[in-house]
Length: 367
Image 1: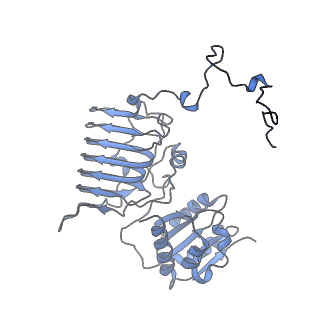
Image 2: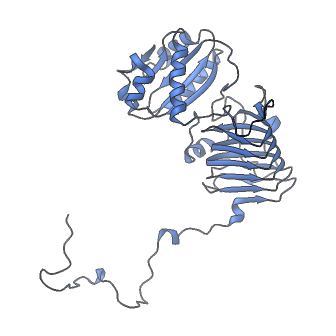
C-alpha cells in the first residue's frame, strides 16, 4: 500500500493547639476596619488598557485607502460597515471580523481566529484567511480564500472563489497567533445554504486569476507603503492547491510527513520539488491521529507508524500527474532520507491511499 523512509511542604497551623487563634506575624494579619495606609489590591483586569471601539471599527468611508497595520489589532474583533469604493487592508490577526453593507470594495484580511461574516455586501473583491467563512445576502464577490472549515454562503449570488495567495512579512506569525494551519484550506468546498434549482450561486475563479488584478497592492503614498506584500504563488504562506478543479491525470500520490522539528519546512520543500517537476498539488491537511486511526487509514503499513503519531499532527499532501508516484518515492529517498514519511507505493493503490487519508481527515474536521 505504501512505503516508508526513516533514519534509524506542609503549611504550618496559625492556631495554637487547644487555644484561640493568635496572630504572631503582623504581615499575615488580616486588617480590620479601614486601613488608609494600604493600597487596594490590583487584579489583572484592573491593569488592562481601555479599549476604544473606534480603533476596531471602519464605518461610513468612501473612496479611501484604510485599514490596520501589523500589531494594531492583536487578536481583537473588528468591524467594517457602510464603506464604498474603498481599499481596506487589515494586516494583523483578529478574533472575528464582520463586514456589513459594503459596496465596491477591495479587502485584505489577515488571519482570523474565528469567523469572517459578510452581510448585505456587493461587488467585493477580497483575500481572506479564517476559521469560518460565511456570507448572507451578498452579490458578486471574488474571494481568494483560506478557510479551515467548509465555507458557507446564504442567499448570495455571483460568488466566485479561488485559493488564498498572499504574503507579507508577519503573515506566518499571524497564522500561528490565530491558531490556523496553512495546510487546512477548504477554499473550494462551498456549501450553499439556499440553493436555487437550475441555478448556480457560486463558481470557481479562472485558474490563472491574479490576486493583484482584483485586489491591488496598497498605494505607495498610503500608510501601508512600508508593508512588503506579494501575491506570487511561490511566496504565498498558504500552499496553492487545485482544490475542486478537475485533475489533469488519473494518477495521484499520497505523501505524509510525521511530526518532527522541520515538518512544515519539509512539506514546503516537497511542494517545491514536485511542482518543479510539473506535478500539481491538489490538497493538503494537517491533523492529529490516534493509534486506531493509523490502523484504519494505513492498514497493513500501520505497525511502524503508531509511535510516530503520538509525537504530534501529521501533514499530508495529494500530488497529481502521470508518473507522480515513482517521482515522489525518489524525492522521499533522495531529499527526505532522514525524515519519517509515508509515500504511496504504486499507482494501482495510490488513489485508495489518497481517499482513505483525506476521508478520515474530513471526518476529523467535521467536513
